[in-house]
Image 1: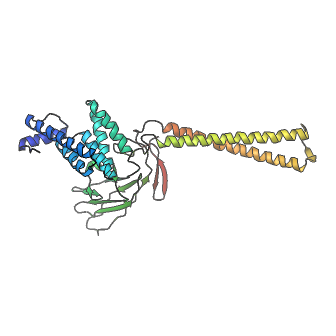
Image 2: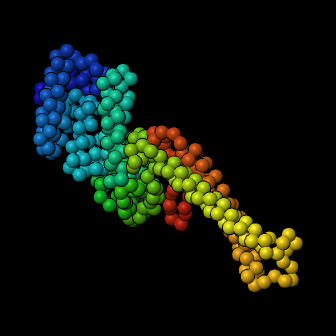
Image 3: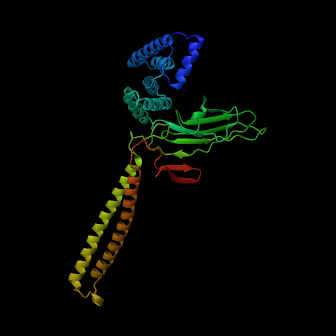
Length: 342
């Protein structure tokens, strides 16, 4: 790959940072050629299922000529290598970058759609971590499983491979923060970094993670759907509605049976009732009828409440999968709650 002279290299870096396409003429031609050549070499290795080789070539191509298409293939290589957390991050970024560019460059529309769909398909294979740093003293460095996090990654959803998340934060003059949490695929662990007082003894701090069921959402990044975009709470609402209707039907059946008992008693005793001459069999019919009436009331009331709750849940959870944080079940230390945007 051709190295750029000092001034041209500086201008090239500024252009990339600003997303400017135009480069100095000499540098532009060579960089484009390098990037495209590396991408084609990466595609050849990818088609040959030489994942590690393809990954290295695509990353070199990204350095020479950043493109959402190239990042998409970086994510695909990582997925093929079983590095699902890294793959999700790259596919999410590819979706975001392609989505931002497709208004001016429609050729990135298929890239945005493919990257989003493929990242969402990985959500049940990886665990997620959110690292919050309410107060970051100058010189703060935060790592997640050994990887240094940028400030832009604080309070965003980060994917991790494996079953353990370890967060460490250090800053000059304060006690470091160290937190660990066991994580599982499809769930989220939350760390809140709080430094100790200056000159205090260094201690390992066990994190207090909040585990959250994966719900729908766009890769911004935030929690994403595990079913390719459908909101799980719509299924919950439909299920509740169905159970409520079934209970109501059960109430109709018991009401019909109770009506049958009443008709039998009227035939046997006449319109004035059986009175003191009621037989044991007739008494049994009366008791059974009372039980059926009670069951009918219970079924209709519970069925109506459940059906109404299911309908409300279905309507509230309606909409597309790119609506962030639909109702989410959160389980913390001694607490259970439902949170989200209703």
